[in-house]
Length: 82
Image 1: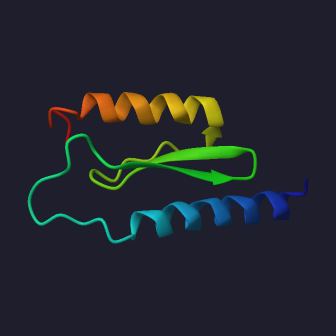
Image 2: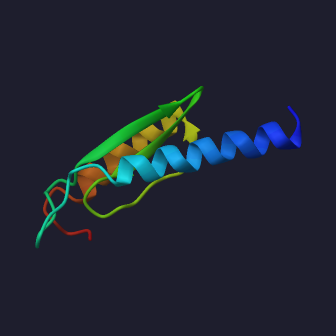
């Protein structure tokens, strides 16, 4: 892969995460408990995106993202995380 191709893929990945964050899951005061998390797939990688606190993992291995999604939902089950 050339440097140009790598840069293009990084741009697509960044724009994909930005689009996910802009979806219509907005709150005026409180977040959901647990937080609303989503797995975004791009090629052989995936990212965990939280629609409540805006956290994203960046693109990682699919299994690692599945674990992060479960952990984030569990951590925010009682509304303890921001």
